[in-house]
Length: 223
Image 1 (cartoon, helix red, strand yellow):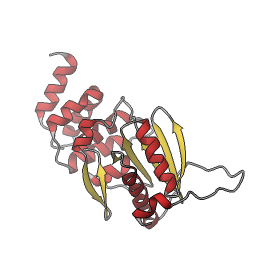
Image 2 (cartoon, helix red, strand yellow):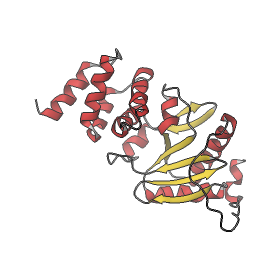
Image 3 (tube, rainbow, N blue to C red):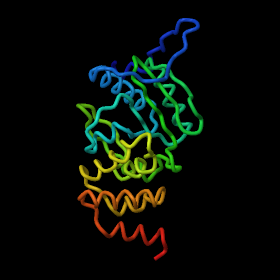
């Protein structure tokens, strides 16, 4: 799709009585990248700040695993509503899924999540926006949240059902140059999880300096 045509594209009509499923499905890489490019173009056209997170960002920062969903982080519900309108103009079916944290778009089986609050009350705030960089993902240039923020988010949302998040965080530590002062600052969102993650990373011979571990331990336990 030509990015200049986004304002002229009308959403497809759904047959009466057909419910749209907002569950992504397995698609080939070519289809996923095509729809990812269309979604990113729609968000660019909307003018709101956004950045890739989730599996896309993990792959960019060194955790090599495939994903069939595109997760984007936005500042707030208002920006997500604006982005959702532009996705619909690009032919995506859309849903205001949960006004507390997520809206969705889907097209040809590729799901786009517009997230405006992550677990731990983490937002796409001005500090994160200021550190967002454009990085390459399989030939596409996308804005991506900072690796330090992605590590914190992954540490917090990790649970028994989704152990991949913990290992995503370790993969990012192993594969990316980390600003440890910034990571320490952002660890306020989940300090005990982050302390556990950094100690575990050291136990796996990943390079994590002692200083941020010591400072985080001292801040938590007031020693």
